[in-house]
Image (tube, rainbow, N blue to C red):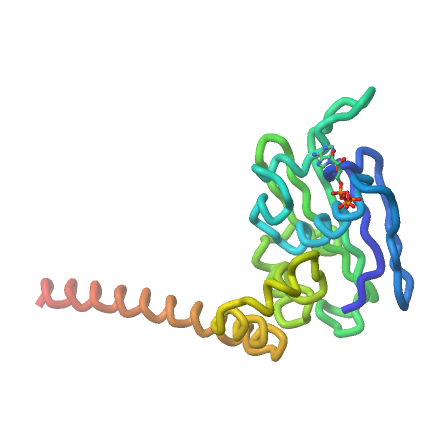
Length: 198
Ligand code: ATP
């Protein structure tokens, strides 16, 4: 999946609507310390469903909303949209995929796929095994290389499974097992009722 661009509004230091376009090949983002370079990768990870404020270098999720600056009032919500190509035909036949996440100060959170409201699960399922999940290798931050080298064997296996594309099936297996257990429970209850009636 090719990331074509990111649009951020109200996310961290992006008080104004900011568009970053990625051309084919290599894009370098340069700027002084604290100018917001890492905020761009945070924004990408956030849209892909990051749920940990700590992983976004904040204490609470609300910290991603622009908190004001000299002569700038804080904003009430943060919104980030990723524009991706749809060469893999992840959804229908649209040439592009747009994924949006919005968070209000009230804590209300919304996700959109091509402007239609969806659940977080729809987004994580869509990108599972594409290499673009929130924990995928598309974003390698400072320290990540060391972390992978020093990881426990099981954690490293998890990474390899995601890369190899088996994670999706493991997740579905888990979901199916949960459904199966629920059905067994229901069946037991029905049998109890039948027993009572007989
Ligand atoms: P470095 O090179 O030091 O890593 P950087 O260019 O990657 O810097 P970032 O870490 O992306 O910079 O940006 C940090 C800036 O974002 C800080 O100036 C911080 O004040 C600002 N910032 C972070 N969260 C918010 C927020 N919620 N509201 C306003 N500004 C924010």
